[in-house]
Image 1 (tube, rainbow, N blue to C red):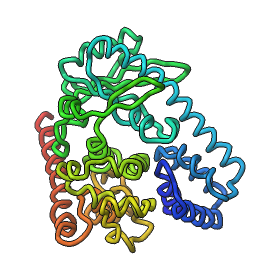
Image 2 (cartoon, helix red, strand yellow):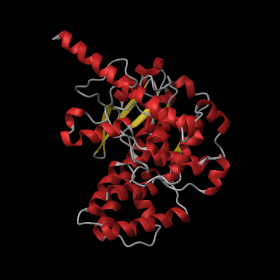
Image 3 (cartoon, rainbow, N blue to C red):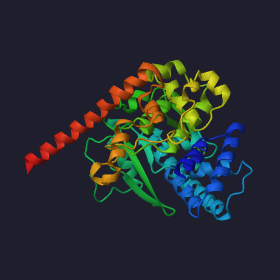
Image 4 (tube, rainbow, N blue to C red):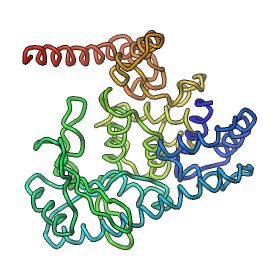
Length: 387
């Protein structure tokens, strides 16, 4: 059942649909309905919300000829309305903040959800977010934070965020009943060997403008946005939160909406695996044929993968810890650690087939796991010495 739920949500992980996609969605929903148990529709709702695609499921469900259970449709509509209202509040709040930064001559980029929901999706409510992320230079960080404090955004009473972390401790203000969280970034991504250093200065000169309720804001260029969404959503360290389908929706929507505007030569210069990785999303939700052709995506290398592995995130150690796994399930944990799904390997390591894929499978991935083992061993030794 969970495989079918993932397939339904994966098909909906996009801003706009087309005939082939909607046909597959209807067929998958019919199969789901035929085998659905008493709690299956509630589980679909739960997973849609967890994956950040409930508004998109609502959006696409209205465009097909399928009779959903009345309670399911009502609850799904309420999730969409909640997302729309929350992003309406966030947009009003961020306009006030950006106006203050502009008056103080503080350059800033709106990043992640607050930018994507406004320039990428048909309407802001289709792209949920957890907080508002703003990237400023290190030299303006204190001034930017002071303005937020003047606007009554409050720091947490307690936090464990170190002073040199890639963003400041979040500041929170409740507006219209919504706790609104602001994260001020000094760097786009966490300071980790898997990620490049990415301060404001790296992208501001090439940044692009977009509108939030009639006000001009700036965000990353299309090429930087594509690369960043991939790094943040799909190439995070193995201990980080697994990717969610909302990140797949961002990738698919970017390539389908802006394939003619993206500078592919520039993108491939920074991210050589871009077309290979993007073709992996064709297995989740079918890309338009003209987009595949225009971008030279090798989607034929994605065919004949089992539905149960397509879209499956990494499920091995250290994502799941040995101490939290029952003895009966430990062999499966070892298997998932050493031999994760082909689809995930292709997305994470950026190789679809041939020498590159097998090198990733039997050298790069074991090396990555070994690095985590060494890290945990060193931490254990240091802890024992202190005792």
